[in-house]
Length: 138
Image (cartoon, rainbow, N blue to C red; front, side, top):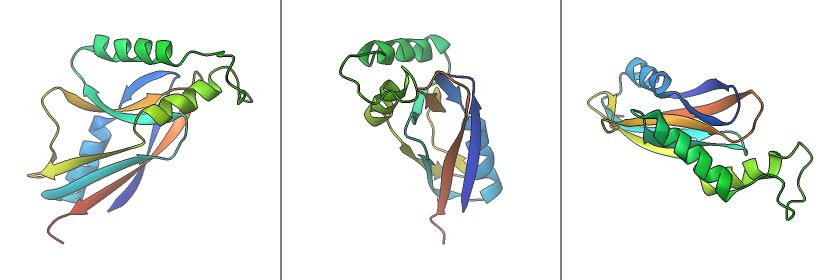
């Protein structure tokens, strides 16, 4: 089963979409298999991260912004603004796909794990994520 999810974001930051993926797994009736997620963008990424304390997400955002600052004089790709090249670097340093086992009809996430779209651009966006659910029984 292959589905496309659209996740709307308001700008830079981590945006949880775990419930949308869980819903797809439930609808698929897969008991054992693999859920693969792939984001179709070069300035955003995917992440499995703590979903209990929002300060962890805030700290990640602050850390990556310090690691990859805007307006670095080395950047030549600035066509779409000061956040353009940093967004591409951040996406290159993080993940554009995730694989999560499906066990007993559920995502095999840990107690405090959630699935996040990590938006690296400042403007609001609609991001597409391909979800491929592979059923071990087939």
